[in-house]
Image (cartoon, rainbow, N blue to C red; front, side, top):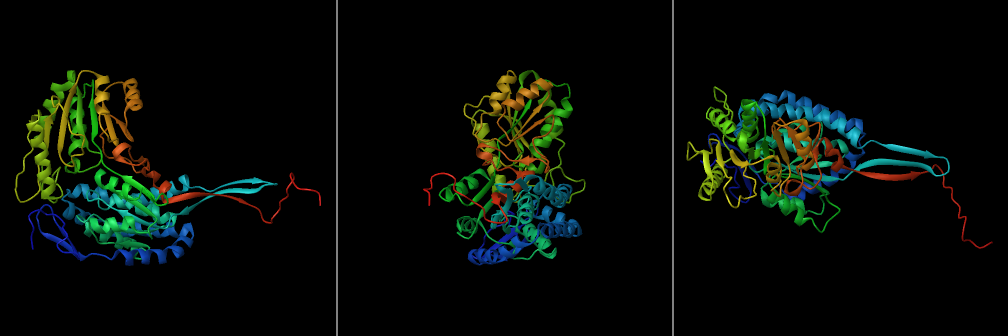
Amino acid sequence: MTKGSGEPTKVSQSEIVSFEPATGQELWRAKVSDVDAAVDTARRAWPAWAAQPLATRIELVRRFANEVRKESDKLAELISRETGKPLWESRTEVEAVINKVDISVSAYAERTGQKRLDSALQGTSAVRHKPHGVMVVLGPYNFPAHLPNGHIVPALIAGNVVIFKPSEKTPAVGELLMQCFNRAGISAAVAQFFVGGPDEGKALVAHRGVDGILFTGSAQAGIAINKRLASNPGKIVALEMGGNNPIVVIDTPKITDAATLIIQSAFTSAGQRCTAARRLIIKESMYSAIIDELKSMTSRIIVGEPFGDPAPFMGPVIDNDAAHQMVESFLYFLSNGGKAIRHMTRPSDDLPFLTPGIIDTTDMADRPDVELFGPLLQVIKVKDFDAAIAEANRTRFGLSASLIGGSPQDYNRFWANIRAGIINWNRPTNGASSKAPFGGLGLSGNHRPAAYYAADYCAYPVASTEMDQPRANIGVGLANS
C-alpha cells in the first residue's frame, strides 16, 4: 500500500499507520493502545520501581545506552525512513540518545543532591527528592528518538514510570526506542510504549492516574495542554514548544561564514527544528553582501531522499500537508508585500520535498508572528543595531536567538536585551548542547527548561526535620501544675 502524502494517519478508530515521507510507502502499522489499561499498568509498576536504589536505576539506563549502541545502525536507518532526514543527520540523533544517559546521571546528582544540616537541639534538617509517579511523555516527529529520550531517561533515573506516546507521524522509531529500554531490563510496565493519536494524547493528559505531562511539540498543542490542566496544579507540566527565532547580522567581514551560519540555522532538518531561524534581521549596510552570498550558497543545497549519493543536506518535510502549508505561507508573503529572494518550489506534487525559500518581508505591514515549521526564511532589513534588537523581540515566542558579527560589547547588549532562553553569538540558532538547560519563554515554554535541567521537573524536593527520639517541651504559656 502507498500513500502519496507520506503522512502517518489514523486510518480507522483502532489503528495508526506510518508512511515514509521520501517514498510514500507504508512503513508501520499497529492498533491504538487502551488509555485506562496503560495507566493502570503504570500505577501498579511505580511503587516497586521507585523503591529501587538509585544505583540500580542508573545501571539500568546505562544498559539502555548499550542497547542503543547495538541497534545504532538500525535506529538511524529507521529515523531516516520515518522522518525523511538524511542518514548523516539521523546518525547524530542516535549519538545524542546514547550520550543523554551520562549527561542525565550527572545532572541528577547536581540538580537533586541531598543536603543535611545537623543541630544538637533541633535534630537533623534534610532535603531529599521524590519522583512524581506516572509521567506521560508526548514526543514530536522531528527528533523522534532524541527529544522524548531527553524526558524519559531523567524521569526513570528519578524513580518515575513512563508512558511514552510518540507522534502519530513517527511511531516506529518510538517503538524501537522503548524496546531498547525493555531489553536493558527496564520492564514494559515501567517504560511503556503507547500507540495513539491526538485523541489518545488528550485522554492521557486528562487522566486522573497520571502525575505529570512532559510535552515537546507545537505551541498550539502546548497551550491546549496548559488550559486543560489549569485547574489541576498538582500535575507537573513541562512544555517544550516552538519559536519564531531571529538571527541578527550586524557588522562582520566574514560574509561566507555568516551565510553558512544562516543556512545551518534556517535549513538544517528541512527547517523542522524548534530552534530553526525563521527571521533573518540584517543591518542595511550588510544587506547586499549577505544576500548575494546566501543566494549563491542556497542554490547549491542538495535536496533529496535520505540515503542519496551524494548525501543531501535536506530531506523532505514530514508529509504533504506540511509541504502544502509551507508553499501556501510563501505565497501569502508574496501576496502581502513580500519580495522573493529565492522561490520555494515543490519538485514533486506527490511527495513532500521542498527547496529552501527566502523572502524579504521588510515592507510587509503585518508580519504574522507564527512558527512556520519548514525551510522558509524571512528577511528583514533594519537601519541599526537598536532596530535589530527591537525587531528580534517583536514576537510572542522566546526560544532561540543568534547574533552574527559585532564586538563583545555588542553581544553583551544583545544578550541583555533579547527575550530568549537560548542566546548565541557567531553560532547557529540550533544545535543546543544537552549539557546546558534547553527551553524558552512566552509561547516557547513554561519556564521548565529541559536537557540538563530536566531533573528539576522529574523529582520534587522534600524538606525534613528528623530526630532519633521524640524530645520536646513547651516553655511559655502553661499554667503551673
